[in-house]
Image 1 (spheres, protein in one colour):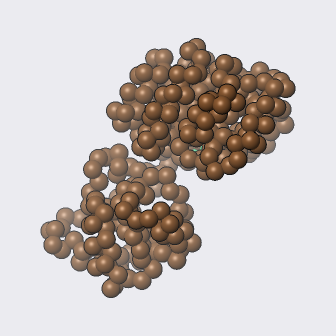
Image 2 (cartoon, rainbow, N blue to C red):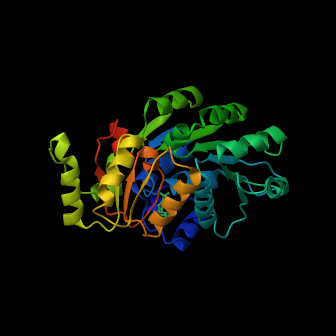
Image 3 (tube, rainbow, N blue to C red):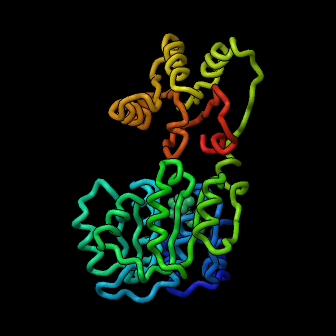
Length: 327
Ligand code: AMP
C-alpha cells in the first residue's frame, strides 16, 4: 500500500483523492529510493505509472511556495503533449496544496511563461528547446533546483535533443538529484547517464510492463516473394480494427502501399520523405479512423498514441530489438 512508503499525510490524501489505491511496481520501486535522495535510472514505459513515480518524491521534497521563488524541480520531456500530461499529473497529485507548476514548451508565447516564472514556481516541465531559450534569456533560474528528471530519455535523444539536454544539465547545480526514465536503455542513454548522473540505481521495469503482457505475438516463415500475398491474407483474415504495417525503407513503404491499394480501402502510408503537411493529414485521418491500415517506416514507431490499433505488423523486421519494442 501507499502508506508503507513513508509518504506524508498530505500526499496520502491526494493519492486517495486521485483514487490511486495501490502503488504500481514502478512506484513501489522508485519512490522510496528517490525519497532517500539517490539518482535513479528507471527503465519503464508509458502506462506504468512512471510519472507519479517521479512526481511523488518531488512533491514530498518541496519547500513551501514562495512568491518569486525559483523552481525546485525541472522535468524535461521530448514533446509538448507529454509536458502537458506530466504537468497535469503533478497538479493532480498536488491536490489541496499550494504548488505552482508551469509548462515551458514551444508553440506557446514565451511572455506568459516568463510572467509565471517571475511570480514564483516550484516545478517546471518543458521541452529542451524552449528550456534553453529561457536559460538564454535568464528567465529560468536553476540555482534552487534539487531534482532534474529526464522523461522518455531515449525519445529525446532520438529526436536529436542531446546537445540541448547537455547544455541544460550543465547549467543545473552539481549536487542535484537526477532521475532518468526511458522505455529502452540503448548505449546513448547509458552514456548520458554515465556523464550526468551520480552512481545511478538501475531499476528495470521493462519486463513487468502491462503492455507486453497484453500483446499476443506471432511470426510467420515465408519466402520473400510471397510476403505481400501473405500480408493480404492476414489482413483479410484478421480484419484489424486498425493496423500499422512497418516497412524498413521509404521506397519499400510506397511500393507496398501501391500494391495494397488495389485490395484495401481506408489505407495510406507515412514516411520521412513526405511533406510535414501530408504527414499531419495522414496521422489525423489515422486517429479519426478514416485510415484503417497505415503502412509506415519507423517514423511513427515512437510516441504515437492511437487507441484503436489492434495489430502491429512487422512486414520488414526491425533493425534492433529496441525498435521492435517501440513498434
Ligand atoms: P504514466 O505511466 O505515468 O503515463 O501513467 C499512466 C496512467 O496511470 C495515468 O493515467 C495515471 O494517472 C495512472 N496511474 C498512475 N499511478 C496509478 C496508481 N497507483 N493507481 C491507479 N492509476 C495510476
